[in-house]
Image 1 (cartoon, rainbow, N blue to C red):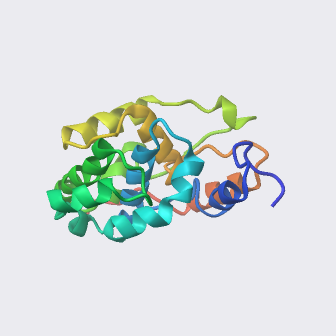
Image 2: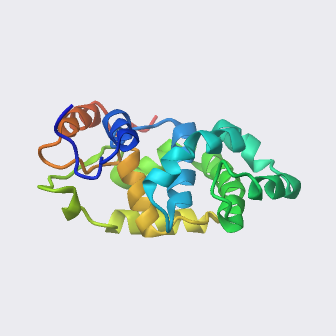
Length: 198
């Protein structure tokens, strides 16, 4: 693939861009993973987080929400010393807090996917940027998602983090106009239809 968004500047970033970024995801485990990783990125580069992704998967029970929600203070202490992840206590503690919040979200909304996708009416927002640099850092939708997650007690879910999350999981298609992935993600988005009330 020759045409890519201009941020995919390394082999690891290019692989992530080509295979995952912007692809609509409704898998709760993946959504929780991306919420954790986007929060971990705050103040750091995405390359740093991608390089530690496997470390995060091992440290946080493959992003099993229920397992992470049961983590104890002793487990958190162990994670703070784990070089395979970002050793920031506040960020590590937030993963456990957020897992418990996601449990509540699932209890009330059926799934994390149903909850987050409701902010875009269960259909990806399709943008048309000449360059990825034109994409915003946040929007009214990411503002609303951020506020809603915070109401459930989530941490590291500011509007900029939420917008990056929306881009990552395909809630918004921000592949730039001449990127080969843009049409593919758009086609996948068209297959999604708002869920009818039963």
